[in-house]
Amino acid sequence: MPLPRSRRSLGAVTPDDFARLAGLRRMQAIAVGLLLGMAVLFVVSFLLQERIPWFGYVRAASEGGMVGALADWFAVTALFRHPLGLRIPHTNLISAKKDEIGTGLGSFIEENFLADDVVHDKLAEISGARRAGEWIADRGHAERVGGMIASAGLGALTVLDDDDVRELIEALVRKHVVDPEWGPVLGGAAESFVEGGHHEALLDIAASRLEEWLVAHPGAFDTVVSSRLPAWVPSVVDRFVDSRLHSEAVRFARNVAEDRQHPFRIAVGRFLGDLARDLREQEKLRGQLEAFKHEVFDSPRIRALAESTWTTARAALVEMLEDPGSDLRTRIVSALQDFGHKLQDDPTLQYKIDVWVMEVVEHLVRNYRHDLANVVSETVQRWDAQEAAEKIELQIGKDLQFIRINGTVIGALAGLAIYTIATLALSPLAA
Image 1 (cartoon, rainbow, N blue to C red):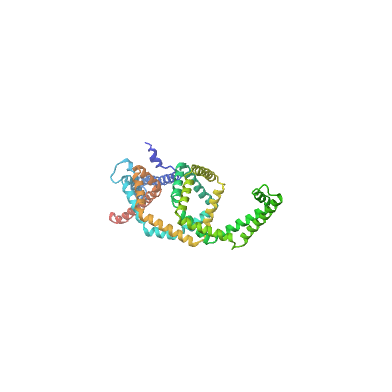
Image 2 (image 1 turned 90 degrees about the horizontal axis):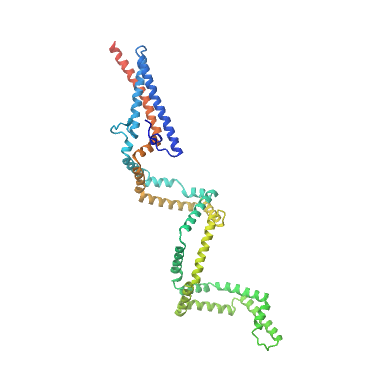
């Protein structure tokens, strides 16, 4: 009767499984061949031992070899199934004891592989940060990690609902930007700005630009001034006034730019200082600022602008993340490589990361080692009993065939030794 397919293939699926299965069948054939060889020797020597006395030694050796081969075949087979289909007690051990094997294997891993000292010593032997730096500094590896980051980003953008994102952004902006009172914050910022003299730089830029514009566009300035004079004023007076005021304006702008103690500069500084104080202290001004703030942020146009901004930003992000040659993907890869080189060259950073990783791993192992071991136990317990036996036989069956081969050889030597000793001991008595 042909064996069931699962018994013949032992559940082999992958190419490695079929390679192991072929090796197992090869060793089984060798073991069976030795048994048959011993059987043939036994038959021949048994028939000829009366005519050829030394064939008695061959018979004893082949008889012992057959006994050893059959005994070890029974022992190996009994691990995985009932020999010859006979339900002999204490056979088919792996299937019968599958749950106990899984529990014992989980406990063994927990006590011997996940012990605190074992994990600590193993982590202390390696510099994971340095190796990670060497790995990620390679452009190919950095591109692979960059692709994973881009895929994760695309996944997040695909899963996230636009309305939910807009609501989240609005909630965050309202909580951290709109709801807090602006007056004291802006007042403090303006006060620090003035005390640090930062407004002087702005005045330098404004005065210089104003002077440049006045020099470059005298006609535009003259038109603005002349349009303000009465119609009855003669044109000669217009040109005189225009020229005079233009020169004064240019001189004013130049003086403001060059003179740090110019009255205009001092006036601007006092104005900004008074404004900073009023923003912090005057309830009326603070109220006006709050009303303006809420009017702006609650405007439908601002909401529409925020929505369109998110939509545009999202489309741009998706496009850049999908394109391996985009500037964003290129920058991600470059940043990863730079980080990898820094990990390679900075022992302090390596130490900090290694210590952090060690603490995290030890914490996880310390708190979840039992759960990790249970994964092994529960996985084995979920296996079908026959499937479990086949999986284990496929992994270790080839090595177990050496037991059968060795049993054949040792049995033959033992049979020969026993027969020889018995012959030498009993021959004087027979004589």
